[in-house]
Image 1 (cartoon, rainbow, N blue to C red):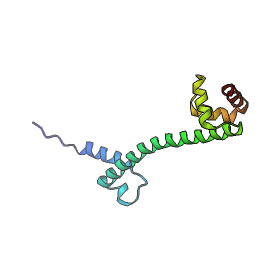
Image 2: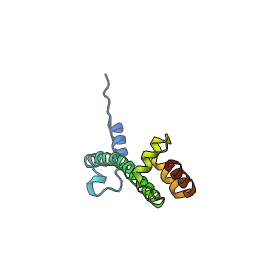
Image 3: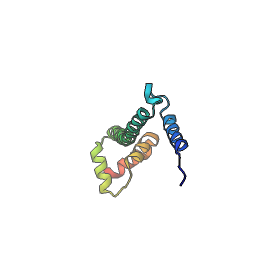
Image 4: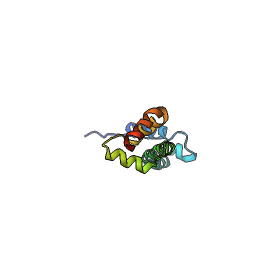
Length: 115
């Protein structure tokens, strides 16, 4: 049986990984072993960062809704509670968009839940 040499495959894999590590400092960008550990860590942080971004955005939406509700003489938690009571299903992202770009519509929404 003939011998299979895998030099080409390994080199291709190493090159692909090192190419992804471009811009890292020192050995982290050009030594395979260091580059791989750094990339694994970077991918973990990137995954975590995507989750944190969602959390931060939700917090921002809530702050915007709170500010808009306060300007109409209503507290944030009252507004959300009354929206649920009146079966008005709208997520916080859309509610904040309405509060910013269509203040008249937001005012109508507040008046609807108030009465």
